[in-house]
Picture 1 (cartoon, helix red, strand yellow):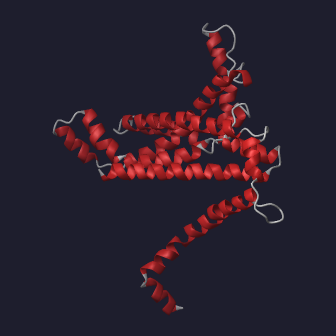
Picture 2: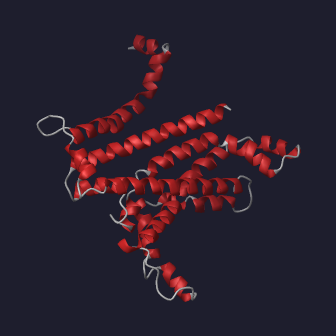
Picture 3: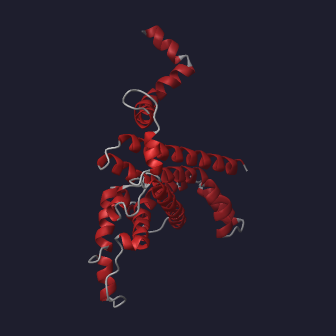
Length: 291
């Protein structure tokens, strides 16, 4: 036993494998195996033959909302992720310097992290419904005479706005925490030296602060984009299938249609889109970091 431990301690490769083994096991059990099994469920029939029936159902069945789900998922991601990133970046810039009450502001901005997707959806539904807080406030102020109907099939644009607001409020905290943590690693002496030599705030922001935040920004964008394509609870609570999304259609395929193969195809599509976008982010940031 002692000789084995001695060999391992003297072998960097073996030592690295042992240290990485919990992560490797986790990825194999909870990531690799479900992905492989999804392909089996999606494209293999009960008698063991390859079939494309699930894909045919997805693309051509009148019960399928695939194309609308794909469009709305991309639309929400394209709207939500840039706005969240911009808001989080502004908050980090404002909070970069210490001032009285700064820690309290950080805690307040991080509050949505403590709420689940379901809780966030219910909060915004209660606030925006016909008898909710927003309509009551606007009526009391005399700005409107009748309540604004945010929800319902006939009000898709307003429902989409409600989903957008709920998602931005719920998920901006994730991006903010990642960027804020990265900002704490920046050497303040570099900024102070630039200020001493006459660099304006804009110059320091553009050439020092934001470039040093790029690694954190890359991580935040990858994580938030992956979550954006898995959006489900907020959309399901506020809109149901009036605004279909990929994860919601996967849930509907299992619970209502009992088509596990179709749900597996949705899962594969979400995984492929997320992986491709992750690679794009990594490549783009790698090029910018080299410059």
